Length: 121
Image 1 (cartoon, rainbow, N blue to C red):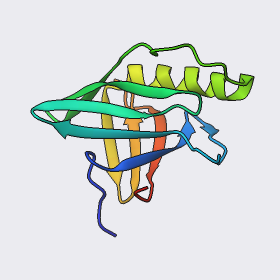
Image 2 (cartoon, rainbow, N blue to C red):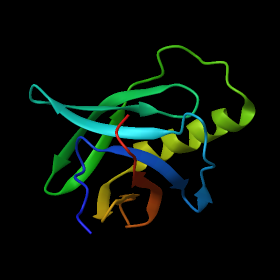
Image 3 (tube, one colour):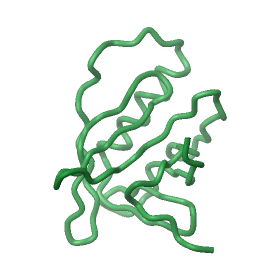
């Protein structure tokens, strides 16, 4: 099985920590895209857009999130999912890709969030 590239792959959130993310009509996802020398991070939290940038230095990944642009009126479950996802993204210190699975890792190597490659829209 070929390995999906970190960049320019739409990564669907499968779990945050040990908690599986339920399938949704508009599932949460992450996209890391280089653009004109910048590394842009975008996606959907299940509640609102995720924006920011990322850096890869010495094979390690660091994500920097922008604050949400507008507070979204979300149901309790999507809002809780968004909070957990943002916390996991902000704590990311490294990553691992195996086939079509991306794991975001803490500084001590624990899986913070797991993603699977999603079909391109």
